[in-house]
Image 1: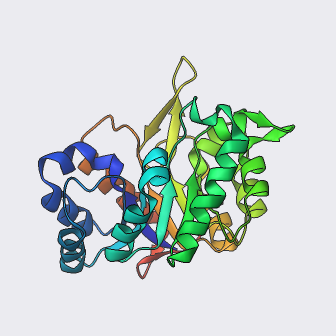
Image 2: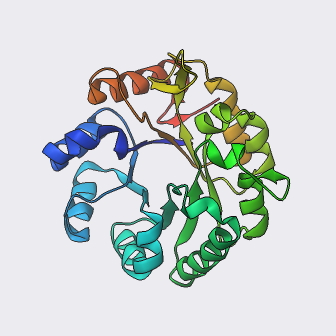
Length: 255
């Protein structure tokens, strides 16, 4: 697997200095970046920056409603910067009140992506595991209803864990369908909520997840830290340091 960064982790830094932050991510040893916002840069500007830094555009998290309303433009932008992975990042409570409507929309989006040579993925949180549809986790209903050729898995392994399920088991269940994972660590606060932390500083069994991801055929392990207790650039540097100490050999992860 290759190592990428979900840029949401450094969102405040990007807002202040987009180009400088991207260059710093590359300097830290990340091989690719996953976008969530383009900060008013054109596709040509983003592609030039990626070419300069040697970073790969892994994909982009784009709002569900934006994809439904402006799917063609979103797909075209992403293809222009060198990526095929269009990712639905989140569903609001209102949006997921009707899982049948969600799966119908995902089929349409998946077909739209496929017709243009792109791939649609869905990124989970914990609610897809805790909310049930037809007697099963909504996660499984969604992927069981939308065929693999129209929807691939971007498994946030930390949220699977926090949702009460075993990420290793889920990676095995969706082997061959999970090209991307989010590699994330966490601690549980006194109120039961999740606090995301630097890799290796939490309770998630990262070693087993890395091994299971390799076995599942995952291509990219994408580091993400939703909230950082210390400076985000320092946090992603420490996560990379942990990966280099434990798993990275010749630029790729080896579990």
